[in-house]
Length: 529
Ligand code: CA
Image 1 (spheres, rainbow, N blue to C red):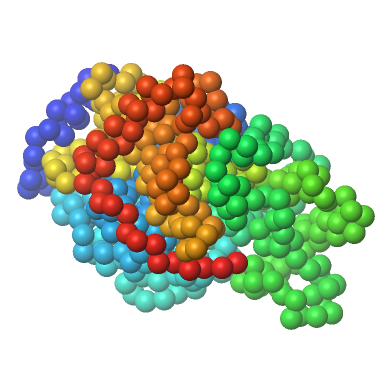
Image 2 (image 1 turned 180 degrees about the horizontal axis):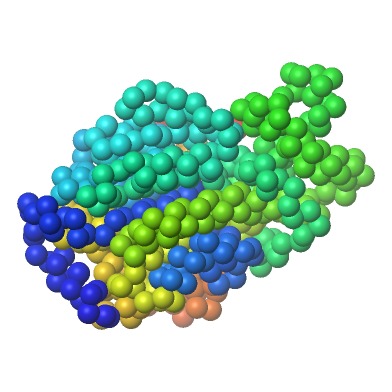
């Protein structure tokens, strides 16, 4: 750990309210770049990557890459609430995607504002309830139930609604750079630039639509998982790549078919103007004609169909990530040109990871590694050495206390997360947390189905082992991540692990107590598909 890092930890321990103007001006700027559903595997800097992301990689190479960053609840709204509050879902009230956001509760961004920071959130907010005073400036995607559109998106701000022409990732970047240019440069800033990409329906930027034809992406080893050692509900969830069609794969009518019958316009093309749609047709019509030909010839059955859908799905993911990476590059270039790079902490994260074919899925929600983890990269010149790798267990609840500590504010006792500063040298201190908690509530049973036909679950993961409790089914899973990193063999009943299972059961009880997690609410959802 270098001197400056030690200094910041020391500062973090001293409550410094109110801050004097001169102290505030010396604080670093904070730029939080946030995406939606970005798998670690789709970032070049991560082990096992399938694509190139030179600009995201630059953040990692000039700073730190976190290899074991976990969400507490792998779904959009709850994760976003945990980033803002530093708390697990039951404490901030956002248990699932239908939970209302209580914007009056404590959030780190308001505290930074009170301490003299200029604060802004631009882009995808995706909490149920627009921002109020969590940030001083807000301008967030408003269409499609808060998901926003990829093309010509609508925004809402304190000034009212607006509409922009173009591609969402470009527009959010334009707005973020414009905000940095107009700010009062006597004060430090917190800017959260939050992108929709690469969330479904994965629609790339026009310039990226035609790429990767003829490229075969590597398949994950668990693509054809048969779930043999697990409960039947694991195989019954509605997130399989097998059978994917339509908007999930950019499969739609050709230009000629649409001209003949405009009523065939799929929802995911409705937001585009005619010129944008023409580019989409040029790129996707040949692929979709080939799809129709293969389907008619009976060549998309069984594993062939899964392989085909996987390639379509992963190519669109990578195309969306390319647009994201290019815009991260634009933002980094602006920081360089404006002289802001040296005194700005740049953080890149996603609201969760995502299955990119692992276990045959294209979704999140589970406590399995691919959706439990999220990508986390931090560049902080003078405080993080270039090329730092942090393998310690961290969580999304850690962002809020980390940024409070940066500013020199005390972390309230009720915040669950831990400031990450002790890890920034790369080594894990002996007293760092040894395990992380997971809770997922947007689930159900066959009698009261949850979203995606998912089961509710909670669990604990330490450096090597993972225990998951599907409490509505009284079912358990246990994985040895060292010997079974793909999580293909549920070892809950293996006598060799009996001691570890009991140890983790005790840890789960202890963590629930530590975070004051109440018993899960009764199931009420009754959804069919
Ligand atoms: Ca998400």
